[in-house]
Length: 139
View 1 (cartoon, rainbow, N blue to C red):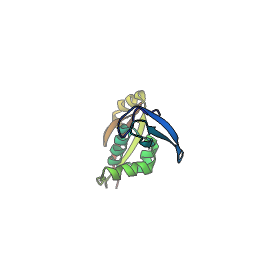
View 2 (cartoon, rainbow, N blue to C red):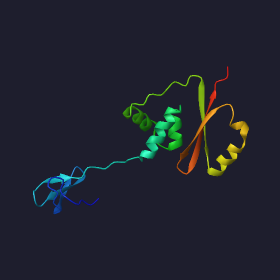
View 3 (tube, rainbow, N blue to C red):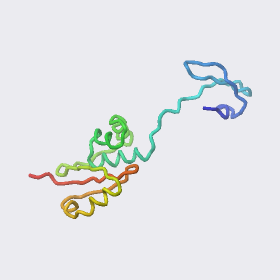
View 4 (cartoon, one colour):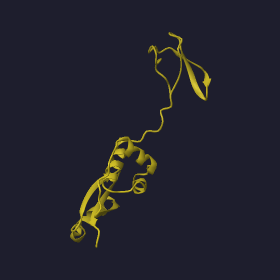
């Protein structure tokens, strides 16, 4: 990662000035300010954060979301805490989900018997589609 300017004065005349705690140290030639570059970290696209929160609100568990999106269930839990999301109770409904390609989804939707008797939602998930279906628990 190349630096463009000093974070203190904005001058572009900076030079390397050693390594401290395994991090490159820099010196600004104008203001004599020493600084290091903070680690940027790993950022997950907001698309997947939104999808994870939607799936949580639809009644899927953390582990199910982990298997679908490929993000740790602990990360999903942290997002839910961060955004203060409260799951509504779905006491008498049970969500099931299926992942389809476009052609598989079209074939699935052609069968009218699979569409009746339950609520469902279809959402895009990368290059595939997820169908979430709610069916009442049978007494």
